[in-house]
Amino acid sequence: MAFRGKVVLGVTGSISAYKSAGVARLLVKQGCEVQIILSAGGAKFITPLTMSTVSGKPVLSEFNDPKTGAWNNHVHLAQWADLILIAPLSANTLGKLANGLCDELLHAVYLSAKCPVIGAPAMDHDMWHHPSVMRNLSKLEGDGVTIIPPEKGELASGLIGDGRLAEPENIVAFINNQFSE
Image (cartoon, one colour):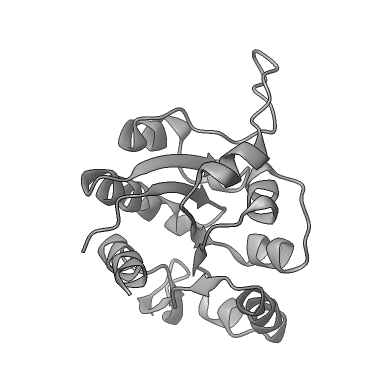
């Protein structure tokens, strides 16, 4: 059964951020309402224009709109969501979330969430297997975050190993399976 809820899709700083457009497109296609929150790091890899085009909504990234000053209410966003999906989940964001740091809108939404949170990590093989990343991952899982394991394959570095962001179809299938149980 296809999940058709309201999704906050957090996109963080990883070369694999381009895959998040495919995730958003697939979620919208199956009937989800998708609100993108693009981190500062994520914006270095994919544009708000791309993400707003596939989601059909303006992309949020700041605590307030720099043009109007309007507040992007993180509490409201967290209450609105049926699911928070962070894909890609970079090592930087993983560490910040695991330790309760809150210097970006996405982090504040996460800390205010009462809905399920799913993270799909993406990083190079050695980063993925680093003890500090594993500690932070354990903390997040202990806090109830569900992790979509990264896939093995060719990485942006040219190496082959673990750390690839799961393919968009696999991420959406994982979500559908989680919500059909």
